[in-house]
Image (tube, rainbow, N blue to C red; front, side):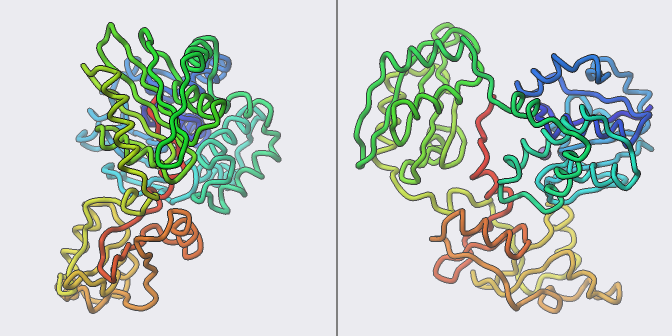
Length: 431
Ligand SMILES: [Mn+2]
């Protein structure tokens, strides 16, 4: 039996790619994780009959001989699939656009396009497979969700070509618009009213911010949408919602900001959560909401700095010295799933070694030669740590590179990747 599956918290790119998997591999059974995002859930609830998707619990895993994984290349993002990881003789096919996972496929199509579905549409076109308008609609929703309707810096020409092709196949933009809208209903409206009723603005470091404690009971979805709307209505630079669930003795803190001067990601990280400069969230157990509010105010007061690349960079920096043998470099690249590594001597960047450079090796024993014989030294694109994320995004697009070394006073202090920059533009709030 062949199965095709995608990542937990399935988004439209994941779901579109899952269904595209059944177009490319007609005998594959689509297995959807139990958790899907609210937009996909809404879409599925209406289109359920059309897609014969199964849950992991419906699958006899001992009968699976081929596994097709789409839109992720990490085992832990799959639902109940890891049991196949060490199965002998299983064929693993991978379609993805994320660099650096831990799945080792038998065959893969992995390119850093804006969406995975883009790659699969190219193949569908190649194989001249027919698409119904409904499939075209779903697939276009996948591209639009992952590329912000072709506007994120991660968007490639191929994403736009694929989008054009889907419009030719009569993808319905009205349907897409209604499903990609964030869910907002009576529950969220109640919370918003409550926030507005008790709203207060304060001026910190020259900016208006608002921090509001609201009691909730049980799970309320899409609170990030509520906080965003609250911030807009109140016309403040940054807004924080502290959602206190007495019964579960926990606070969910969600922040949104439109100014670089209030770095939500930086503030929320100090509280143990995550996010990016514009948005972030954290869940805190057994804390008094008033104390959380005080903490936030203190952090905003003390943490008002412009978003620096340091907040976005990947850690730890993995580099090699110029005398490292090529075989060691190959090992690191393979283990980490990187396409390239900086070569650093005495904190100074002296070159870049990439997978492509291995083509320069003519004899096996050259694997023992030092990296300095093969690395590129000229025209290395770097960025100074005081530049903005937008400038990095422009460099990534201009030079078509996925990783840029970050220098401070000439010393290498980090690497900024395409993913880091995408994270800056994406909304990373968990839902
Ligand atoms: Mn994706």
